[in-house]
Length: 100
Image (cartoon, rainbow, N blue to C red; front, side, top):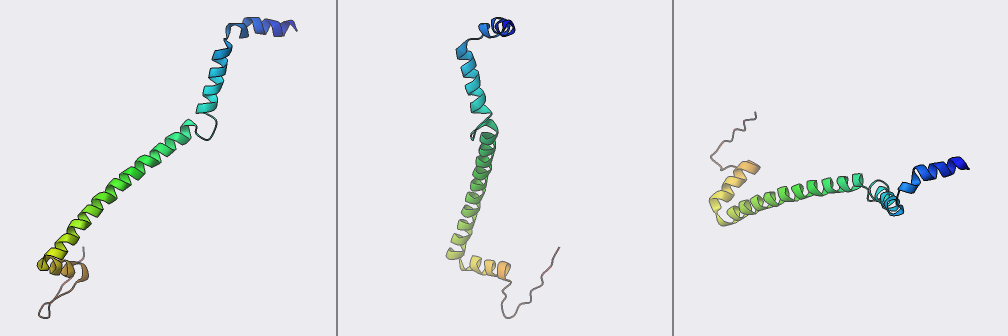
């Protein structure tokens, strides 16, 4: 029994109970549980990557919207698009496809 009393008087008497409770709470909050630091970091990383993807697709939507508007407003642009994308041609033309 004196060993326990000696341990208590030597180490634990200097600790404040509030400090111990706060330290245990911090460990439980940041290390153990569903929302620990690692999980929060991975969620934040996934959110950042999804936001970049959203930004990319918004730019792509805008460029496609401009192309569509050009196709609807100009017959020459519609013809050019049909020739480039679908390899359409006029009756008196020959098309040569060169691949790299």
